[in-house]
Image 1 (cartoon, rainbow, N blue to C red):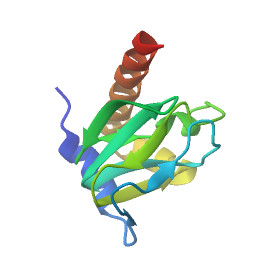
Image 2: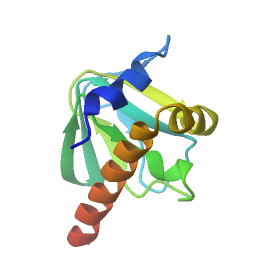
Image 3: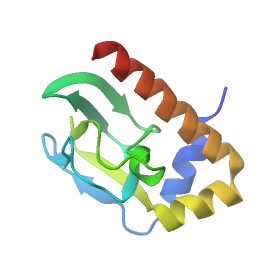
Image 4: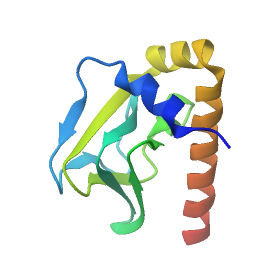
Length: 122
């Protein structure tokens, strides 16, 4: 099993994490984007068509689809509690993948598992 510790450590290197208050929208379904996120502290609700389908917590990543060819966000993300997020744009993501292959595996695993769960709900 891959360790979320490796994934979170990639995001912890950032000097300027984004902070969201409970209930604050991180991104909307259908919105374009150019960053993926790693939860440093807190919890995030994942919503499809306004319905919460999953809650993710510290150590998990989300929003990576827009960095690998998906044109727009397939779900909304809202901070469930006060939350601190690290983020990577495409350049930083590609660098992290090159430098830490296990990071790439963790992101792919997270993305494919979330996609499978979302497809079952639709």
